[in-house]
Length: 207
Image (cartoon, rainbow, N blue to C red; front, side, top):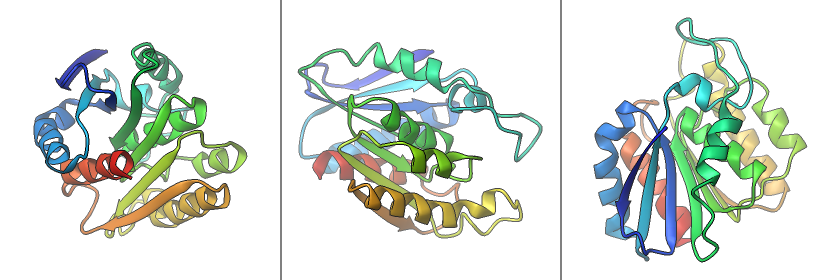
């Protein structure tokens, strides 16, 4: 896993996001958008994952598009991320988009190291994830959720469940007394990923 760092190393706020090659293409714009409205200096750490479907999946699941199944590499990925979160003077936030957003939310159930989680257009259709949320406690201080208003309008029957499952996720977090928000964005899953992810990080660090 390769690491890309941006911003000031001495900053006490650290933002962490697992990314792939597509994310890297717009990452500088995302960071610029955060910098414009952030109330504090921050350091941004992007983790380039090698196998998106394996490295970010909390458990194995069958393919829902294409032929590539989902693996169970999330625990190993989180262990690598946590190895860089060992400075007690820093405040850590984790976020991501799509499957990376789901991973970020999942990670906030595994450890209390993250002050907040920004889960933008996460793959909430992932089999078994709502049951996982129901049976476990989120350990983050604040949680941001968002979804595009056209994301559930797809012919794929599994992915079409994302809207209802996002609403269920938000309700579960509220029932557990979490400080959270759920925002709708215009467009489908492939619109404005940089803007949506930046908005999520801004909410958790400025909240």
